[in-house]
Amino acid sequence: MPGDRPVPRDSPTYQEFARLYYLAQRMSGTTVDRWNGNLYATDDELMGGFKPKSGDMRLSDERVLRHLTGAPPRTTPSARSEAIATVLHESTHAGLATDAPGEPNAVRSSQSVGLMEGVAEVHAMENFEAFAERAGYPDLPTPIPTYPGAYAATSDLLSQVTGPAMTRRTLLDEAIRGPGVMHFDQFANAAVQNRLRDVVPDRAADQQAVRAALISTMTHVYWPTIQHRPASAGESLGNEIRQHLNAKIDEIRQHYSPGQTQPFPAESPNQLAVQAAQPAAQSEAPKTKPDAEAAAPARAGTSTAPEMRFLTGLAPAAGATRKAPSLGQGQKGAGSNHRGPTTERELD
Image: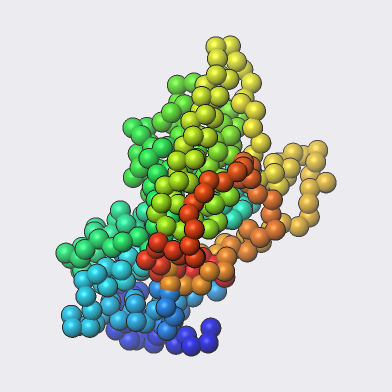
C-alpha cells in the first residue's frame, strides 16, 4: 500500500519482530504459519495487522515497531504493552487456519470474523503476561483491549459454554488453532460437554445436530461489527446470546427424554457441505464455491475492509437474522482503544 515501507530483514526491528512472532507461534502450539516473512512499517493511525491474502504483516512504525527495540526514553510501559499485545494478537491471526468448506457446522459468514477477532483478543489479553515475560519484556502493565466489544462478547460467551468438562483454557487453546469458521462449532461443543453431556447420545449424528442447534443461538447479526463497538455493546450481545442459548439447551433436554432415538432437529449452517455429502445429490451440487481465504481485521488502528473474501455474498448463518439488541451508538471503534481489527489487524 502507498506509504508502506519494507523493513529490512537484517535490521534490529525486523529481527526483534520475527523473534516475538515465532515465540508466539511456539507458545500457541499451532502448526499453521501464514506469514510470508514480509514486514512493512506504516504511518497509519491504526496499529496495523496481518494481511491474509498476501501473507504480509503491516504494523505501525509509531505505535508498534518503535516500541519493540527502542531505548527506554523512546517509549513508555503502556505503549510498549500495547505494542507487545498487538504482536501477540496478529501472530494469532497468522497462525490460524480460517476456512473449512467441507464441514457442515462451519459458519462461513461474516459472523465468524467478529468471533475470530474476539478469540484473538481474549487470547492476547489472557496470555499477555506469560508472553511478555518469556519475550524479555517483564513487569509491563496489562494493556486495555483494543476491541472491547469483541473482547467482552467473546469472554462472556466463553463463560457460558466452559466448565469442568472443557475449561476456558482448553477451549481457547483449541480455538486459536482454528479453523476460524469452526469457532462457533468449537464453542457449541464446549456447551455440549459441560451442559448437555448427560442427555445427548455420543452418536455422531446427535452430536452434530445438537451443535448446529446451539450455533444458531450464537450467530448474531452484530458479530460482524462488534469489534468496532464498546464493551457495553459486547456485554449486551453476550446477554442476548445467553437467553437464546439457555432456552435452546432446555429444549434439547426436553427432546432427549427417555426413549427418544432421533437426533435433535437442526439445520447445519454450511448447507453446501451437507449437499456435497449426499451422494444422490452430488450431481446437483453447486459447481462454484465461496472463496475460502479469510481476512483478518487490522488491529484498531488498521483497515476495516473485510478480509474474509469467502464471507461476502453468502446467506446469513442459521439464526443470524433474529432481532438484534441495541448495542449502543457511536462511530466505528467508539469506546475502543482501537488498534484496528485484523480484519484490520485487517479486513481487506
